[in-house]
Structure formats: C-alpha cells, structure tokens
Image 1: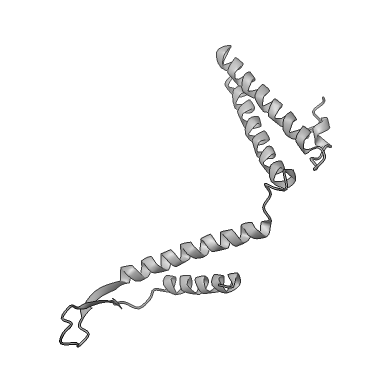
Image 2: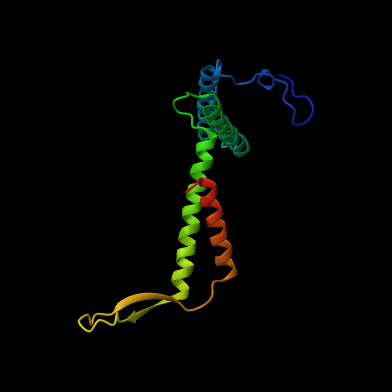
Length: 156
C-alpha cells in the first residue's frame, strides 16, 4: 500500500462503500480491526511504551467506532432504525418542554404569593394567589414567543 500525497490514502478502503448488502461484513471487519488495535496498544504498553503509536491507535479505534455507529444508523437493521422525522419531532418536544420550564422558572422568580380573602364571612381561611411584581423581561417575552411557535409547529 502506497501513501500518495499527504493525507491521501491509496488503499482499497478508499474505493469501497458500505451498503446494505456488505454492511455485516464491514461491521465484522471493523470490529476485528478494533480488536487488533487494542491488542497492539496493550503490547506497546508492555514492551516499550511507544506513546505516539499508542495515541495513533487510540485515535484509529475512535474513528472506527464512529464509522460503525454511522453505518449502523445508515445501513443497520430496519427494526432498529428510526425515521429522521421522529427524531426531529422528539427533539422539538424536548426543546419545547425545556423552554416551558424556563418560562415557568422566570415567572416564579418575578412573582410573589399574596394571601387574599374570598369575602365569605364563614370562610376565614385565606386563598394564596400568585401576583406578578415586575413586568416580563425581554428574554421571557422571547421565550414565550418561541414556545408558542414550537407548539404551533407540533400542532399541540
């Protein structure tokens, strides 16, 4: 295997692409390669401590693991696959919930609780009512608009 210009790999892997038909073989090959690299790291650790070689091997393992994860998502079992639409919807829902919590927190920080009486002479127990002491901040107004927009997008 020759290495051409800097950063250019001229081996067979440069031309092969992972497809549904060769996914399992590619996964098996990558896992075997990772195992070999781990053994190489252990050997280097016991015999000579070549830090640069060990670091390169560790980076290579990380790259292979990332490739495996990508290939699994792209070409793996259809039963395990999720549609990108569902992923986006789930993200939007989580984001909307986070924004709602932030709005609630901001409103709680700027409000106080006041005891009020209902006016009924038999009911002397006061009711607790939340009052807004200060006007909403620009940030809070932006968050509320963002939350409403997200709710409309989700149809909720």
